Length: 344
Image (cartoon, rainbow, N blue to C red):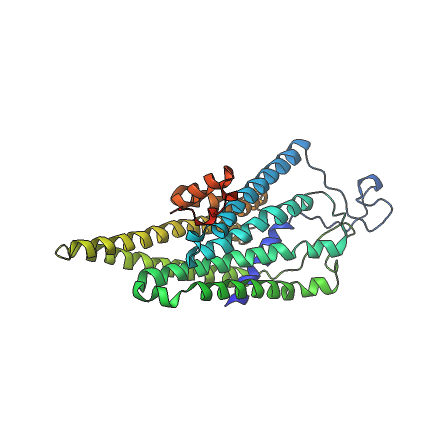
């Protein structure tokens, strides 16, 4: 099923490169990207205020995404109390979001320029990380949904079915598959860079469009929604069952309720993460089915903003993130045995 997720990256790239111009007629020499080349693309100049707004917004989102996700990565990696299967999936998601802020968004700033000046090869290579990170994000979302499904629907088997080692293997294989299929997906472009450019100074990547909506969005998102609906139904039934067993031993009931509440809270928080992800990516696919939409820039911001929203959700719902954030900012993590600190 992983190969299907890889195609999502291609769809996002249609959005990223949709502003690239393809001029067949010969423009005025002073309007060319490369005046000395007759086949050069025509410069498309936008108002200075609009350009500055785009640069400032993308730079702010990039910085915010890098800093917040770096805090998540340091927190889960450093503090041993946070070394759980679920947090390992959150760590994998944070890594993909971190790469979006560190590499993908800065490259997008270059793509907003009127002309691509870095050559055909870098045009293709600059797409490899976006393909991998978007692929990894959707895979992580599905894995998180499966993790919550097993934890809520099969609580007695969760500790045996979902172990740290198994999750590590799943995360490792998912990233390997994302890298492999992203390279395979871009192989045609890598084989002959610039073959789809209509003029010199253009940066166009050939992508699959028609089947992409079904394969890379509807199917995985439907899977996620079905799993969370099942989780919600089981969670409601468990809550009713706990309230009905009033005659149970008080200590036993207290422990059971604590475990249930912990699992339900994790499911609710990660459900918010998945919901925000769907909300941020849905507009693009709605745009893909529209003709003549002028909301491209807004949808690009939404897609990138999702990578910086996830840590904000963790900070709002998870006390451990706020505690670890405080320890990181105050440099207490540099103290000996700081990894043993109580952050839960």
